[in-house]
Image (cartoon, rainbow, N blue to C red; front, side, top):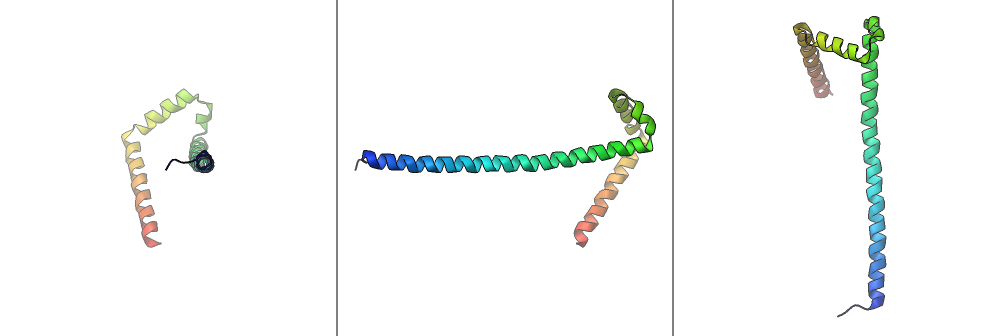
Length: 105
């Protein structure tokens, strides 16, 4: 019942080949994950740049502000009750329109 040395060597080689195959498969999956995550980061970066450009085009004076001053200004503006109302309204409107498009397709 004991396996011969030759049989053990063959099993070892087969197992080694399988291990290498699985390592390559794992690396492909990691590469795919990194690629997909990179795409979402690129989309986020694009959105942030576009939104920042929109703010600068509407209020060109903000170009002169430091990052800290800009954040402080945005916090002040966005904490106004009117701003909260408009943001909520825009988000609800977007959700409603998106829901209609999905349902109508």
